[in-house]
Length: 116
View 1 (cartoon, one colour):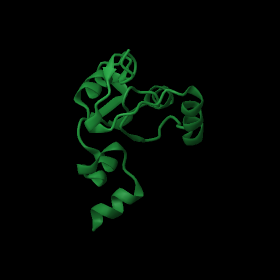
View 2 (cartoon, rainbow, N blue to C red):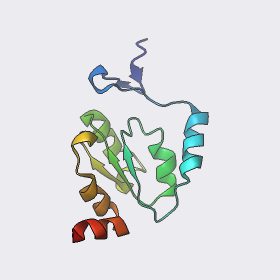
View 3 (tube, rainbow, N blue to C red):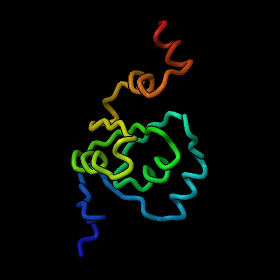
View 4 (cartoon, rainbow, N blue to C red):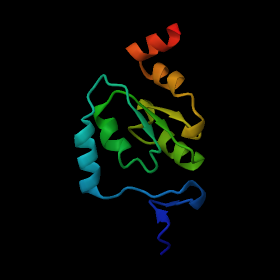
């Protein structure tokens, strides 16, 4: 079997895709960030949703930025995550993060930035 295929998705070299699948690492990361209801979070490169699923279980909504159109479409049709997600299908390196962060949830930083 091709070791570049993960959950039916062929990893694309041009995107440098590597998929997280170690349950201990996933649980450790989720525990460390400790997502809470009402928090606004942005995930860059959700891929096959290894972190997105457990984080999404704890949040009302989650914003994700995914370059790969196939993975973005897969997230959009995810049975329980789809309705919770705001998906930006683009390169995170080209995003205006102030606009994205302020759209996710107004913060003191957004208010200060808009006053400039």
